[in-house]
Image 1 (spheres, rainbow, N blue to C red):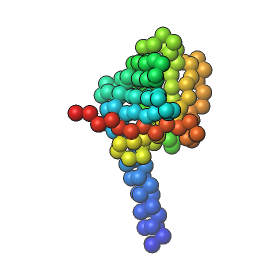
Image 2 (image 1 turned 45 degrees about the vertical axis):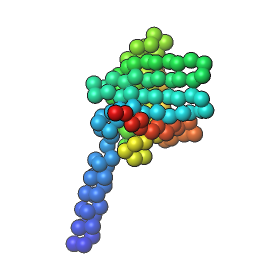
Image 3 (image 1 turned 90 degrees about the vertical axis):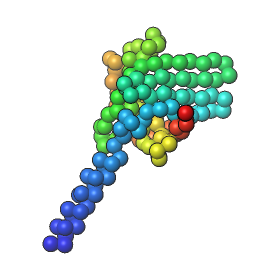
Length: 139
C-alpha cells in the first residue's frame, strides 16, 4: 500500500509541476531586452493579441519589425514561434525559439529560422548562442 501511495504522489507531483511550468501569454507580455554583444541591444515587445515588435539597435543602425507569435509545446519543451513578419525579407520565414523562464523577470531563448517550405527540427536544447532576456520595467 505504501508503494502505491508513493507512486500516486510521485505522479501527482509530476503532473502538477509540468502544468505549473507551462508558459502563458500573460507571463510573456511586456518588454524584454538583451545585449548579445557590446553596443547591440535586442528588444521584444509582446502584446495580448499575439503580436510582437522586434527591435535591434547598434551604433550603425536600428531595425524594427512586427509580426505574430504563438506559444507551442512539443517534445516536452516550450517554444515561441514567430511568423507573419512585416518585413519583406522575412515574409516567407518563421523563427522557432526554445524558451525557458529563469524567474518572473528573465528568460533564456535560443532558436532557428526556417522558410515556410523548409520546416526543420525544433531545437531541443540551449546552445552557446542562447540569449538571456530581462524584463524592462515600464510605468
